[in-house]
Amino acid sequence: MMDIHEILKKLPHRYPFLLVDRVIELEKGKHIRCLKNVTINEPFFGGHFPHRPVMPGVLMLEALAQAAALLAFETLDVVPDENTVYYFAGIDGARFKRPVEPGDQLVLEAELLRMKSGIFKFAARAKVGDAIAVEAQLLCTMRTIA
Image (cartoon, rainbow, N blue to C red; front, side, top):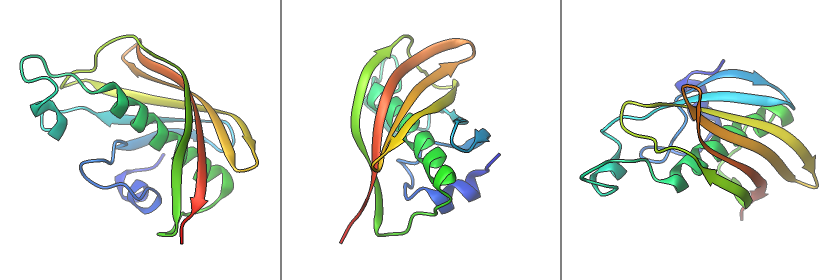
């Protein structure tokens, strides 16, 4: 388990782009399960869409990438510093199965499939209850910036 204070020490993201509220399960080198509580106060709901607010799909994928980053950092036993950036290298097979609306609790799950030459491959999915909202394979990498 990891609360928001520990997450803030590991991820560089801040409001409004921090999309992981809590880690509820983590097995180094294997998988992670996190929570994102979706509220009407999210800044994107004002424009997406005012008549029927739904969480943008790209932000669901970003939330999954943040969960995957936490798994990668824990697996490597590293705490990234201001010179380390964790990037998307690819998104494969993304499928959106259900809209995510205010009041939903998004359960973010990522399984580490491969870690080779600084590239991490994850099978990721986000669920609301038992229903899958999005699933994809994510490729991510860490880079040191000058």
